[in-house]
View 1 (tube, helix red, strand yellow):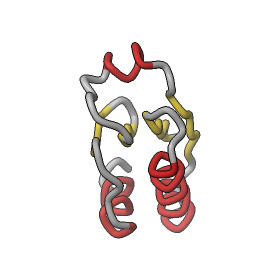
View 2: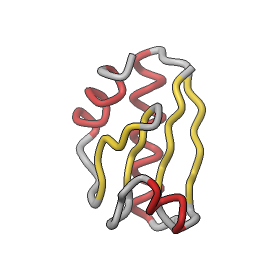
View 3: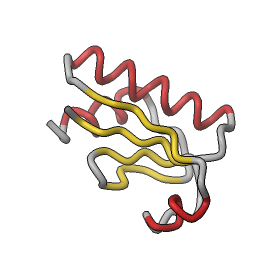
View 4: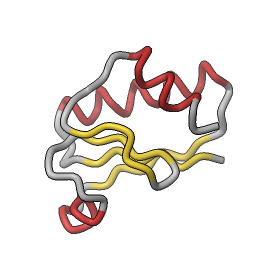
Length: 80
C-alpha cells in the first residue's frame, strides 16, 4: 500500500491535488492511503516552502503547484 500525503493548509489547490492523486491511483489500481498534512512543522520537515505539495511514500514529487492529471498519474505510476 502506498502512502500519499497532501501537504497544505486545506486550500482549494490542496483539495484539487488530493482529488487528482486519488483519481490516478484508482485508475491505476493502486492501493493507497491518503493523509492530509496541515501542520507547518511537518510540512517544513519535507523541505517544502510552498504548498500544495504531493508526497508519495516519503518522497516529495511536486510542490508549489497543481500539476495536470497526466503528470500526477505518471508520478503515482512511477512509485509502484
